[in-house]
Each structure stands twice: as structure tokens, then as C-alpha cells.
Length: 348
Image 1 (tube, rainbow, N blue to C red):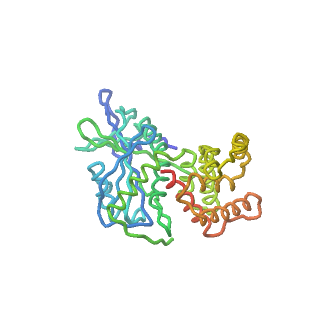
Image 2 (image 1 turned 90 degrees about the horizontal axis):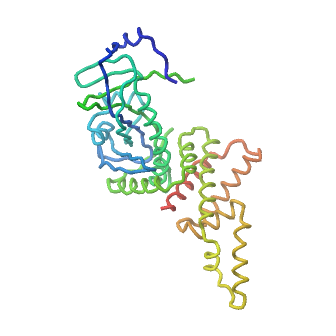
Image 3 (image 1 turned 90 degrees about the vertical axis):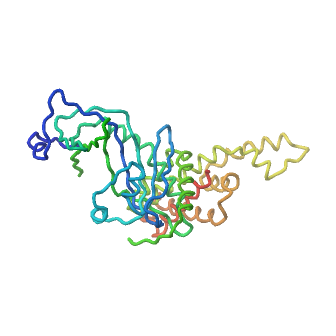
């Protein structure tokens, strides 16, 4: 929640009250910075890629220098001193930066500002621009992060994208940068694999395809899991992503057609056999049967090992639901995360 700040505090911050004829208008941008854990790149900034989800556009950059990536995205640095920034945020390269914007033009609705040669400092005067970019991010980031986590997942380890920093700023018609300050009050080792630029480009392309096609409910729970530290919640959120994807995939399958592909109806009772086939799928209401059927009909990239892994994970989920297990085994969250990512890769 934004804090109410007195005129004295604003003036102590170096801001002055604007005259009636003074106006500020700008188009706003948002940069979301994520530290990557699970792979490394040597290049300071790889080529920028763009995408579109539900009518909203975004740009994404990857590299070993957050400033170099931001220069590629918006032709400006994120931090005055990148080494100090890394120490302050306790992060290490590489980074993924997502750029949202520009918005439509917004006019300042605050009272105080400070003007410098190429910079304008304001206080909480562009709430509508913040709201637009917040909605923009809520529409793009969950499916995009689901796509990134799924496409970059390696065979032996997940890849994590940890929220590290963000920047909200505007650009006026004459090129000045508007920094709108807002005071807000609110109550592990890992291993990495080196990726080449081509490998990163391929995975970013895959991530975009997943982000466009992933179901919003799946993306919401997948993203909740990615940002959850509690192992129980993390496990359950990822399992919900698997469960929702399974039911949705099952609903899309032409069950009679797939059954005919597996079993040839006898010529003396074709209609009876067809009617029998049509009724079978209605009896498959439990998650385990539906998952197996999806593997047989819609997920050719999954194997017997994946089915056994799912059965084990479902047994853990059932024990939690029945109250006989309070915390999942230490490797269960990683296993269900890997399975959830594999289901998204199969959706391409």
C-alpha cells in the first residue's frame, strides 16, 4: 500500500510543488529482472526477442550483464554501478530481463516534482500507468515464466528464474526520463550448465510458444510454485498444474477415434463396437486413468518412466490430502516440477 507523505517530507526529498501551468506527460515502461540459476552464458547480452500473449507485447533479453541487457532492450543502464547492484541484491549472472511498454501517454496527477537536465523526479503521480503495467505483467509474466522454466529445464536439474529487481519509469516527448517514487509498507547451492547463444535462442523460442499456448490456470499454479519456498505448497502447486493440464488434454482427445486406432472393430458388430467405445471414456473419471490415456494418445514424448513417476507423485499427493503425510519427501517437489515442465513441452 502506498504511504501518504506530507509536503514537508516531499520537500525534504528535493521535490517542489508544481505551479498550475506546469504539466508532465510520459509513456511508461516496466523492466522485470530475474537472476537465472541453472545455466550460464558468456555473452554480456544476447539478441533481444519479442513476443505477444493475449494481445500484449513484451521483449526479453538474456545475458551475463544486467546493464548490457537493458541497453539492448531500452538503450539505458539499469544500475549506475553494476557491481554494487549485484552486492545489494545478492545476485550473480546471468540475467533475464522482461520489458513491458510503452503505455499510452499519462499526465501527472501528483503535486511535487524535481526537474534535472534529462531527468524528472515525481512522487506517486502516475498511479494509472502503474495499474496498466501491473495488469500487463499479470497477463504476461505467469505464462512467460512457465514457458521459460519448461523450455530451459535440463534433464538432470530445473532452471530457476528468481525475481531480483524491477524498474518503473516514463519517457517524455522530449526524451526526459520520469522516475516516479513510491514508498510502500508491507507487513542454497545450485549447479549450472553452460549454454551457447544458439541454445539460448532455441529455448527462448520454445518459451514463447509455450507462453502463448499454456492455459491460464496452469500458468497461475506453475508460477505460484516457482515463487514458493515452502516445500509442501511448492509440491501442491506444481501437482495442480499437472492435474489441470491432464484434465484439459483428456477433454481434447477424440476418444472413439483413438480407441479404433488401438482396436479394430469386428465387421459383424461395427455399430455395437462403436457405441461401446463411445461410452468408455465417460467412465475414466480418475486422474490416474486420464493421465495414462493422455500419455497413450497425446503425449508421445512421455515414457513408462514418466507414468511411474506420476503414480508415485499422485500417491504422495493423496497421502497429503488424507492427512497421513505433512511434508512431501525432499525430492518430490523437484520431481513434480520436472513433470509439469515436460507436459508443457509436449503441448508444442
